[in-house]
Structure formats: structure tokens, C-alpha cells
Amino acid sequence: MKEYTYTEKKDTRSGFGDGLLELGRKNPNVVGLCADLIGSLKMGAFQKEFPERFFQVGIAEANMIGLAAGMTIGGKIPFTGTFANFSTGRVYDQIRQSVAYSGKNVKICASHAGLTLGEDGATHQILEDIGMMKMLPGMTVINPCDYNQTKAATLAIAEHEGPVYLRFGRPVVPIFTPADQKFEIGKAVMLNEGTDVSIFATGHLVWKAILAGKLLADKGISAEIINIHTIKPLDTEAVLKSVAKTGCVVSAEEHNRLGGLGDSIAQALATTQPAPQEYVAVNDTFGESGTPEELMEKYGLTENDIVAAVERVISRKK
Image (cartoon, rainbow, N blue to C red; front, side, top):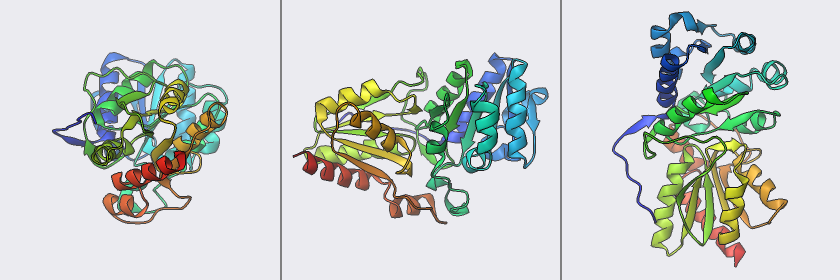
């Protein structure tokens, strides 16, 4: 098992905020819009340095999406910011009609995704957003794993022409990817080559997959671990190549098991090379109030849950 270490923990939303500030200095067409959550989205530095390019729309998320869509007509590259629940569920009609249907160059940037929003509870812990957004034709869906990768993804999507959903979170997590990485939309990242099982992880579950890989190595199980930061377009080539070698799959995500990364992988395999698969995901339920650690434990999103899923899927392969 390849060794991954870290010296610092940081929230992925700060990667977005720092990336947005850097973009503002590089590209005069980048503008920011926020729905009354500047501090939570880490957009304050951009607002302070570029007040003429920042728009505080208040608690009016649908209006924010409409404004962003209109700004693209004048050549602007709008980055909208609010919680993932409000970025998708509250404004799905506006995104579908005003952004996706007409292919507008809007970057929908969503923080506090998944269970790790924590104590705010089920009404704010959206677990369906990846599924909702990946079903929209032409929508790119990205879910980076740490501060560095979130910053790199923020910079990359400004160069991508078309609508993007960028998902990140609130808790501090280990920084283990390179600061100078090149973020390639739609290109999976190999973290550890293995022969017994393919673990495809996204977002906060990538680090959990690395921890699981160490536990599995101690058991004599060789895990191939791949970071799927782009859910759509999925790097199907990387998925099929890995599974052709290992013969079985575990998908890991902080999302409902219905409609997320696991389903995208299952679809790719079912039409090409079927293989046993296990899901590490929230099992078709809403969350609840609690600390991020308590919730990840209760809803089965820990490294131990990944290890158990690997043992199950290997037994099915045999």
C-alpha cells in the first residue's frame, strides 16, 4: 500500500474560496454571486478585493441562478455560492431551464454537502444532489477530496465552457494531494495500484478509502484505490481497466446510494463487463443532527465500512 501522509487539515470550502480569489486576479470576467452565506462559502476575500464583481443576492437562490445565467450572455463567468441543498434542491427548475437547457457557462459551487454538514440536520444535509445534477444534459459534476484538489478544480472549471456543479464541504480533512496538481476534468486519479479489488471513492470518502487500504494490506488484500473527482463525465476507461484486473468493485461516497457515483460505475460495468459490486453510501434515507464523526459512523461511511464491503465483494467474486 502506497504511503499517504499529511501535515495539515483544512476544509474543502476554503479551497474553493482561495481558488476563486486567485481566479479573480487572473480573469476579469470571473464574477461571484452569493445567497447570504459569504462566510460559509469563504467568498469574503473575493468580495473585499473585487466588490464591483461580487453580488450579494440575499436569501433568493432562484434569483441568483437567473442572474448568473443572464451574466453569461455578456461574457461573464459567474460562480454562484450557497449550501449544496439550496444550490440544487431549492433551485432545480431554474438550473434546468435557465442554465442546463441553454448550456449557460454558470459554475454552481455548493458547500456543506452530505452528512458532514453535521448538527444542522436532515433538512440541510442533501444526499441527492449528485444524482440530480448528473441527470441534467451537459452538466459537469465534480466532487474533489481535499483543500488542494478543490482549489485546483475551482481554477480548472473557469477554463471549461459550459455549466458545472462543484461540490465541497465544511469539515476539516487531511490535505494529501499536491498543491501544484493539474486538475483534469473527467480524468480519474490512481492513488494505489492493486490486484484484488477496485475501490472507487469520491469527496471526503477518498481519505477513508486510503485508510481502508492500509487496513486491507494488513489482511493481505491488495486494493486498487482510485479517486473519482469527476462524477460526470465519468472516466469510464479508468473504471473498466481497473475492474478488468481486479474483478470486483467497491464504490464509496457521502451521498445516497441511489443516483450517485456507485450507480454511474454500475451502469458502466453492466453495459460492458459486469462484476460484483458493493456500495459504501447512505442507504436510501435522510440524515439527522449529530457531529460529522457520529453521522459518518452511524450511516456506514468509515474506513471500517469500506473494509467490510471489500471483504463481502471479494467473497462474491470467489
